[in-house]
Length: 319
Image 1: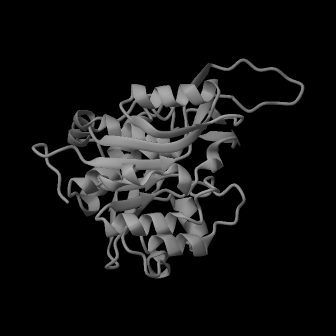
Image 2 (image 1 turned 180 degrees about the horizontal axis):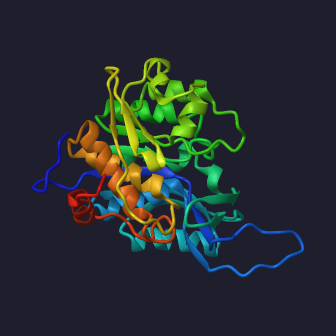
């Protein structure tokens, strides 16, 4: 379904994990035993791949409804409050007593980051917490962090199948597998009901046991839709069901913090696809959203807007 400025806002349901990110930032953020260091910055911000994508979509002008689970604690209240502040509907968030909201410690330098996560509520989303009433009117259903959402992993395919039977598009992002198992069989099966899959290059090569992106297409099996692969400083590639591969270079910016860049890329790809973008044009939109994210601290520190994306894509040095 094509959406233009003259029609209603597209409705996207994001089902996913909720956690806070505590960001330790500076040029030297690696702890040393029995030593103390002074760092340049510290912030507590909204974390979670799913939540950051939801906020970026809301910033782009989409009607976003978030479905998830949080603990009945200060961090849970903070996460829900941040979603609301950034324009995301949180009627679908369930607050569980006696549960701690998940938290990620992000050790961030200008060029990279390392993460430590306490899961808490992150794996607790389950089908009983996803009301059909919220899903019914959605144009698109997305989730992030496939490997962290233990409670939903066996159920995504059924949920996606039901969504697509109603005409709702589907997408997901893998995230890093901290168990290093990669569940290739589960991913391939889910791709049969997926319109957009958005892994990073490193994740995709692990999942499909491939040496390069060009080898992945033949290993996708009966994947229903497109695979948008995030390639960092080399931009992104789009593998289509017909075997074609599109590519787009990155937007040139001076990053401040790369946290959430991939999640904002996801939002750009979802937004662009809802508005009919294809191939390289779709990738460039996603790349611009990801690049804008890096100009602020945290995944939601500098959310993309359609105006900012338009300006960035007009710049001669955009790619």
